[in-house]
Length: 116
Image (cartoon, rainbow, N blue to C red; front, side, top):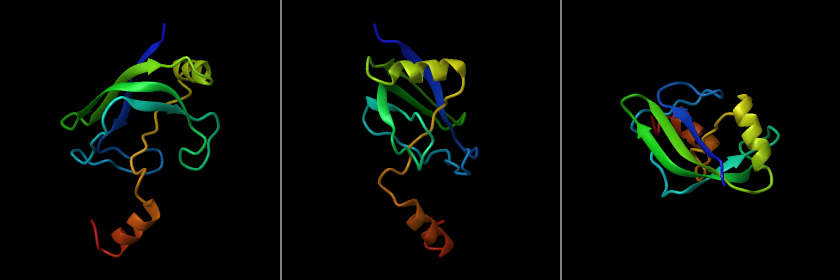
């Protein structure tokens, strides 16, 4: 039987580890379920990440500034290791927000005053 998980995936209005801030009201989601991905070693962005589970519910609470989700781990390679790291508190979520946007290009537009 698949193990389930629940977690805070992001905090709105609070800087992330790399300095990004997701404004309340600015976040939407694609249709569920979504892949729960895990990355064994740190790399550029989410390079090398593999799917180890499914995100089956997603709640974006703009008033309280929390994005939470629930789902299940799949019986696939890497899943047991991802579960162990999560349970030990050494692995946490990293939300892929701009999969289809070039971050460098967005930064240039902000610096040029084209977008705020």
